Length: 236
Image (tube, rainbow, N blue to C red; front, side):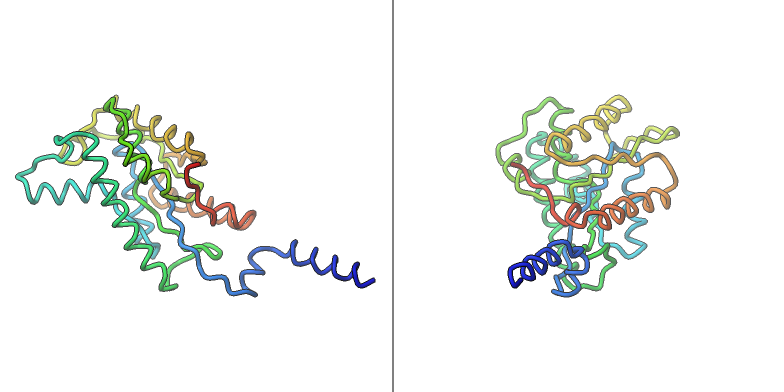
């Protein structure tokens, strides 16, 4: 009888929903970095900025921040002129700095959350670099690959679909042409899928609806399987 009672108690503990156990054991909130990506001019930055206005933690695009900094220092010299590998390594370092800043903010607990997760929405992720290496026919350096292999993100990667109505724009930030933009969409998708991520394509829509779509996907998966968005993916 005692053994049966013990087995019953063990079974009840095992099947207790995760979110109920979290409340009982007061599991601390988990920050998780959620990548919103895509080719240039697809609206990802606008979507990330909108999520920021809603109160969510966000990380700006590292490449844009880096190019802007260099432009202010070097009479408009594009850092990509120093070589793709050097450029991607600098982006990687900037990305880690920006993400670390937001992860510190997440520890305050005063941030919008999904279940026990505090989402940090990133304007691109480190793995986007693989797509740019490929676009410019260069092999990623060992240093870049090593860092990317241990850099975790939410398993769901949000890839914004290209816009049907978009004007070609060349400036200090966007130097790719339409053909390259189309290739980048596919290369980015493959870069994340090849590393075990689930790429969720976000259809063309208003900024507000795209943001709602992204949050709803995370909310749905957090409800059905909390560990699905809590456990980040790292390379194996």
